[in-house]
Image (cartoon, rainbow, N blue to C red; front, side, top):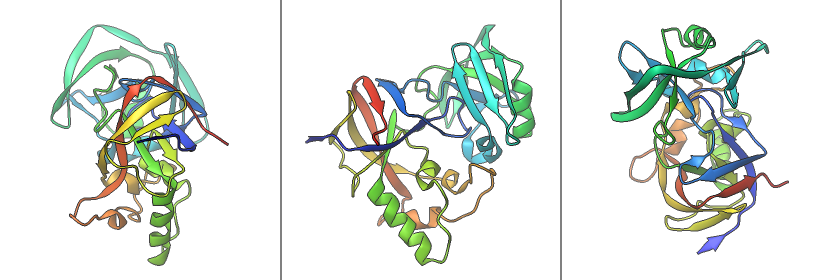
Length: 247
């Protein structure tokens, strides 16, 4: 079965762990959204890619990349930018959730800013496409699931976080009442994706992107019948193309 749901939101994070940025359109290929998790930060002491759940303060940064130029919007509204380039002999494999991520260390003056916000020494690295993405190349959430989650949060006496869908850092939000089943093919703009599995969630969804603080509102509402914390679905790209938000 194939359908063409309306797309209400698109986003990606050029630097893993930083704010998921809303975009009007994205290009997707076999590796997923072009530019998504293009860069990451590495702890040089452990040779491990920084995990978002352990470094929530990074969500306060908005990172954009154009060519070899990287810009960072700081929490105070200041925007700084600098060029980044591959370090000579900087190729290495680092640990990412128990698997090897192929990286190239970068020379960039913005590294000191990332280290200050993270509260530790870090090294900026460019990642091979898809190597620092935990699940599938594309992640999807639906407006129906978001509405039900909001109602559950309100029923427990909590205020619903603003931009609720942004908490899940999905590639796209689709105007559908229920999540499409595994094996479903969806036309998104000129691209086609195939749904693979429900996505398990962690404490990242309880991090307020504006403050980097956890508010513990959402995760308890995601428990499924088998005890897993599920929300949204993953997908693989079966036809590359351009995807746009539809008004």
